[in-house]
Image (cartoon, rainbow, N blue to C red; front, side, top):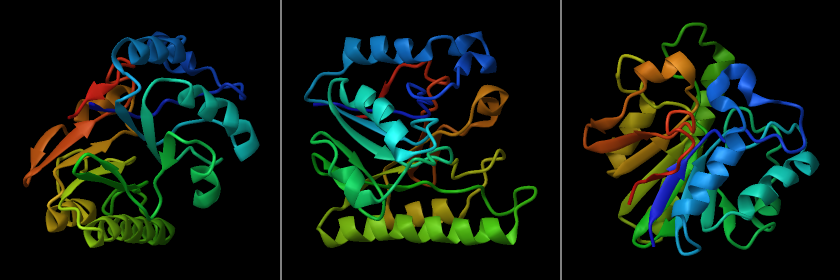
Amino acid sequence: MALYAISDLHLANAADKPMDIFGEKWLKHDEKIKENWTNKITENDMVLIAGDISWSMRSSDSKADLDWINSLPGKKIISKGNHDYWWGGISKLNSMYEDMKFIQNNFYTYEDYAICGSRGWILEGTDRFTEKDKKIFDRELIRLRLSLDKAKEAGYEKFIVMIHYPPLNDKGEPSAFTELFKEYGVEKVIYGHLHGPSLNTAFSGDFEGTEYIITSCDYLNFDPIKIL
């Protein structure tokens, strides 16, 4: 049983949102994801998907995209991205599929690891960071701590975090999120959100004892990366 990760699938089975407007690389990107996924991932594996799942605006429309993911091999753990406007109540989401679960103030497990997470948000100190952003940032920080605390209370000591937004800025500087990872001894963090030229500044590697892995699907050439 292996653990893989990918993010930013940007599926549009029920929406008119062709991704190739962002470049030829995105042409039929869902077919690329499916081919790469089915070539390497088995029913015994697990895949972490860190946000921006579907372009759908409503939960009823997103089901076509969620069903598409669910049809692929393996167990899936999904966290929220900034474009996931379809995301509804967590209890309802987690009742929809047997082998596909959603993270919000909770956690799931892979062997002796707790899989925790939150959406995250743009970082303090970013241009045009407003008071509204501050409220969302603080809320996401609380959600991540709740996720980690629940795992810790359940006896887990090894943590992997899924977060959509980059937890370090383009200069590789720390944030309240990286401080939280350090506090809990988080081993690995996967994140996405960045695309195109922004990927040139994406941090990947060790920072203060935590491994950061960028999983935007165009960065991975639409091929899930094995992380354990």
